[in-house]
Length: 453
RNA sequence: UCCAGAGUAGCUCAAUGGUAGAGCAGCCGGCUGUUAACCGGCGGGUUAGAGGUUCGAGCCCUCUCUGGAGCCA
Image (cartoon, rainbow, N blue to C red; front, side, top):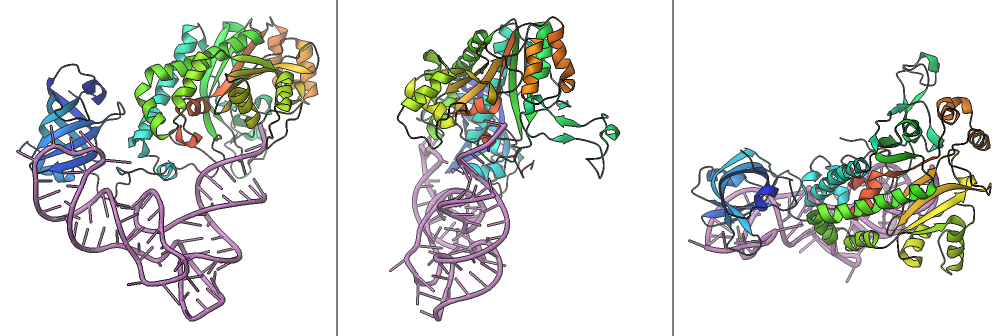
């Protein structure tokens, strides 16, 4: 019966007759015996196995090269040398699968760019093992956060006919051959369809029935953006709350960011040591910053005034009425407030139709949560629940209410104030791990010109 | 679409315009406790591709290709 290395290393007493299976990270030979480091991905640390030349299977030691898969039976004993608490004294070793000299991963450091070209093997590296263990734990933490608060998980559709806010360029989904711009009525769904860019509108319909809901699923953007923060396929988290206003929305968003930072500190501690050493020396400090410092809230107009008074020369000028650039966002959180910041009440002109118009007629109940190092991690709003005003907003944005008839219906039948937000899971992971490129926090990145694997 | 830097051994990188090198990996040998082990030896190259300048180009020039960064949601 196999024991995972994370459980082996957590032992408090010596143990006899353990079976460990994994991949060789490195081997050090001495006369008469070898040290073999085995990693099975269950934790960052590898297990040191001591193999005497006389044990069954040791004749194959020559092929216990980096990358080979092996199975080892032996006894766990306290290690007599410094460097590790436990080691496995092998009684029998078995080579399961060889890895010849062409195995590309080595004991020395590799560039992230090179590792992307071997995305099928990079999970066997320390960094990517840590990244994807953390990704898994954080995905669980997202569900835990909402489930504990009585939110209901909704699986919103991946194929959709609505383009939500015109959030971005969309991928077409079609079975039309030859002429994809032909008669939409002849297509599979009898109309033009796309991969979703957001589940928000559908989530709103469920919030207007189940009260508090959230989505957590893949979304797609067909934009030709080649940056460290954009991918064509990414995972988005979108809670939506009925009988909730902007203040309640900000409460939830801030609690969420803090909970994710705290979860990382508490449950990904070993992997975090790696991120701290090799990726971003300040990552732990940044997480503590978010956990410990109270969030500051500031209206958009005041944020602009602060930026204008700052005396700082930004690459992009601060223009009232325009979106904040990420350098502006970072100034607010890193230098001015020295705390996580929530900016709210943005100009109507730069925000989508579904956001609730404020009494001033010029701003909407939008909010962005800003954190150090990244800038915006969350964007959300209270939604426009008044039928007349929603129709007016759509007119303002030149949208046809007929295309959104079911969304408009929500305001016709038992409308309620409601609010929600969205955040990209990968952007959150970048913030929590310090990893600087979105391609390195998703198993197989989809970016323009790249869909290998 | 625009700007900057880069491409040399399987990997990470060197090399004033003058004989292409090191470490790791691989192969062979040594070492009784190693820690990305160490010591000795061996093999490994169309310097991304094409063209040009030069007595001579990895290095200078032109084009092409690839990747990264920024802008853009």
